[in-house]
Length: 143
Image (cartoon, rainbow, N blue to C red; front, side, top):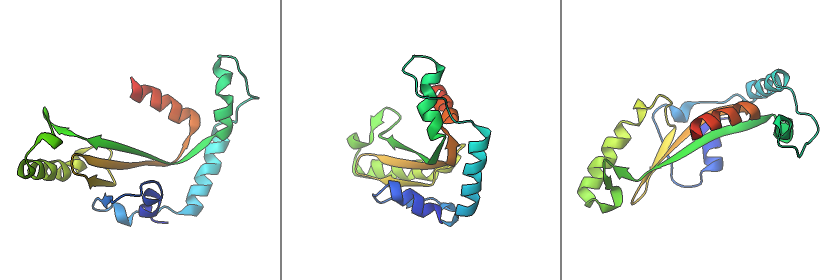
């Protein structure tokens, strides 16, 4: 199935796909095998515990895998100026400059949407990720 299908499943607005992202195909057979391998590598949790200990994550360990991990960000300013406070011509120029440089991100976005006062950027990060791995990465990102 094409990546575009997965992204549109979760984002219903007018996302413009970046160059190359529309042709990415995610093979459902390979994804199923990847999910099986992930479940073998990461054990399921113990019984649910209300204790404030490591085993309290057991319910999410039993979920084991998350599918179609995506991230969205909203760009609302350039330097110190809100896009909404710019004149239309300046906003159009700045918006074009931002869009033309999205590929400079280490993780390439798959699409973007230009709204009146912001730019929404979308990333398709991982088709399958273990819940514990995601939790650990999320803690790192939140810091």
